[in-house]
Image 1 (cartoon, rainbow, N blue to C red):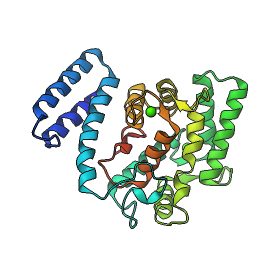
Image 2: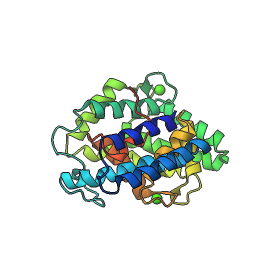
Image 3: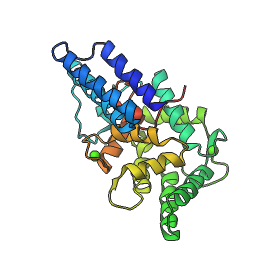
Length: 263
Ligand SMILES: [Ca+2]
Ligand SMILES: [Ca+2]
């Protein structure tokens, strides 16, 4: 499924004329060769890289056309206009996607139970030792408190509440950072062996615990691994994770962070 979607994405990117005329023919030939090869081998990795290259091409144009973007900035003002963030249908779709994944038990609301279920799945599938499991759960507890506050069975977050709250914090300068403060905790949780980097295996395990396929994990991993060294660094993870939440721009690669967007 992911492979088919990527194939469509590659073709439509080419048909939209994103590639520059000069050299486009040669590049598209090599891309389609990669595409065919990926079909033969069912290699999601190759597909993801083809799609990512198309994004990179497109971003060159995007960057030229828009205000300059400071890649290394820690400021929240580097993403989009300062006003009216979170107004687009695209942004709402991204937030509904994130909500659906964090609602691990799929009862329609995000609750502390979801985080504990995620901890149990991660411990079981990842064969964590009791000590590692306890540490993982502590990180999830910290992440919950950071993002949602009180640990209580009555602290439930519906989709509507989530959209409303995220929209509010996004447009309030003093609260804006709060909406992505959970990312460092999540990074620590997903970095199972504590090496300071996330491997593709660790990321697959994380996606599996959220009910997402390994193919989707590979695609997201490839987009988040900006420097293509085969590992997701803390900086790469937080940068794209933050952009996913803050950006209204559907051309950003960060939209792949949490797998396919829900309808
Ligand atoms: Ca739930
Ligand atoms: Ca990397």
